Length: 472
Image (cartoon, rainbow, N blue to C red; front, top):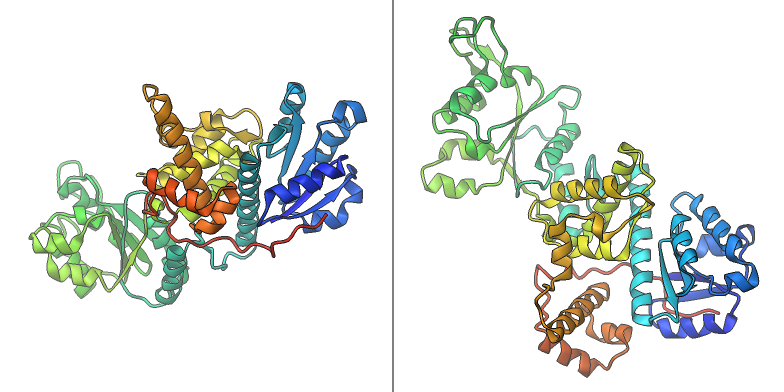
């Protein structure tokens, strides 16, 4: 990480650079004027602004003006501000002027490292979003789908291969993972992109209603059928039909859908005229269709017709590397939708988002971010803006727990967070925490910490960092 430390106290800059240790390349400057920092602005990942002596040196308004100027830069580096604990007015104002976070003097170095790393990750997420917007064909984006985790990269590559091939696709995955977005991406990549994609969900609907929706009806087919009506299959002719929750399709309707796939023809309800169609079928389900076939709940011949190519969307808990990217994307979209000035997450809020298990997947994340943006009044989403279930997961400590248990849980959260940021490398984590490696091993055993799916990212990939050195 490239850290730019702006302070009147050059001695403090040297002390902090040494205390931060590995992973930080620090350059210091006594200039508080924006136009004189051109070289540093191009080089910097995070600004660390020292305003402890703002009242004595007259840097109060100069520092706030500098924050305003930094904020005008598109995708600007975040700024962390060092203030005196007694100067509560300044602590409030720096946040109002766009600081990512603030710390009080003298700073706790473990806390400061975590804040700076969070600011860096926030900056990297914003830069990645800008890159993806500039190039929608980038490997981190597939139309409306976002993801830089290895699982999503593999999925995007498969979609690029099968999209141009006019074959049926079966998409599996939990509810809320974005199966319809993947279906639309495949449609846009294929030869039918200029034709319509018609979507329909089979979930929790009576068989008669699904039949009418899919196949349409003739006038007089049933009571209330006062006119003929085209169904979804007919509407999708020459295009793509997307059937969500195909596992809910009844056994009575499965032969009719099979005939559409085999003979490319059907009749409307109450009609005798055969209608020919040419469609590409993409289906999605959160069920195990192969098990349903064995149980006699799904036709085997239809299953093989649908399952020409199968794609699996992983749940969000298995690709935690994508959470900051998705959260920032939803924050920017929601801020624009609701005309809010929100730009960032506080450190505890981002911790809570990363540590939550997301049973509702990406859809739940989007809803949580929308709620937080609506409730926020400034430029920062704080942890109390998030739903209670997310806050409680991050805190992990109940009100009736003992003092010893609270201390244990705090140590456990701190170790897990540091291990994640260091790619689960124990030697590097020990240096980051300032403890001996043997002591870290004992703590890991005592606190029962394991790199499980729940506690570790989907992969131990770590951001590519600049060469480790310190420059004063």
